[in-house]
Image 1 (cartoon, one colour):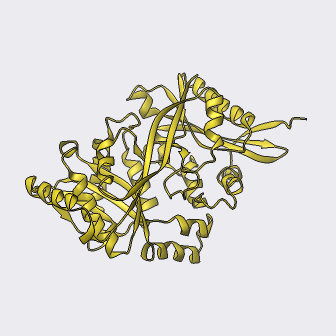
Image 2 (cartoon, rainbow, N blue to C red; image 1 turned 60 degrees about the vertical axis):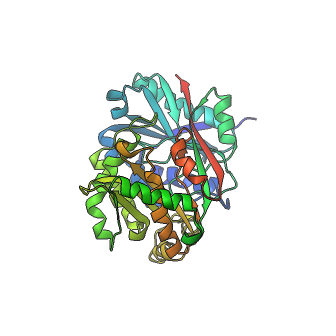
Length: 377
């Protein structure tokens, strides 16, 4: 006899904890899933803590079979997206389920109802509240370790969505790049970087400590808006979101792994934030931020052979002019200094061919692909 599936709205702190902890059960012993910090994840979805609710509405749901959680999902409305960008969509995120399409169907129906309540016409996901949250269902690379800022899921997720009438929307690709000694790196990139620096009278900033980075952080977020405002997934970043992400992620930043390019007037025209990989450290601490586990995170900064690109921004006036060559040329020096031999790119929209051309100058492999899915409601 088919077991009854019960859908429950997340209402209190215990529900929030259960919602956040469900993937720890679903992906237990999975060597490729990266656990989030439990307290940080609760703060992200808690209406009382995350300032994103100034411009968003959300409801979270858990699916149960015989009092056992078998799935979760978030229904999100970003009002800036709807009112300013005129995109009439309800978002779904934090989508995790057992391999039972009936569970997926009931959870996604909750999102559809939430969307209809707000007179929206289509559903899209998996995404978060904004561009700064994790997005994109993994559709290739299930046997590759995830990162701190990307979604991991089982292959059957996409099967469920397709069987329920969803179609592919945006697609992202990710690359793994081998890092050689700077002397052995492509002369083409080094030469091109030098030419572009001289032609546009640009300068690279090297920071002596993290405090020196702080005056540029707001400029970085503004530059992200200018870089990506033409892309299909764009939603303007709000000031309160900047403050929230400073608080959440700045502690992980190492001064050497941030590179900024300025023009002759000291105006920021490009930047990148990279980090040593926290994948193994986060797997080891398994969501709990104890004193000893903080040590494990700090250890990952200093003793690591892998790194990840997290953010890259280039001013529209300088896009398609080779600025990414400067960024990668400079960050490679940091990678060599810190004995980094492998770096992963952040998810790049499939149509962002300009940045992908740069990776072809290095030994690389396109090892992951992810997508968002959509459906009229």
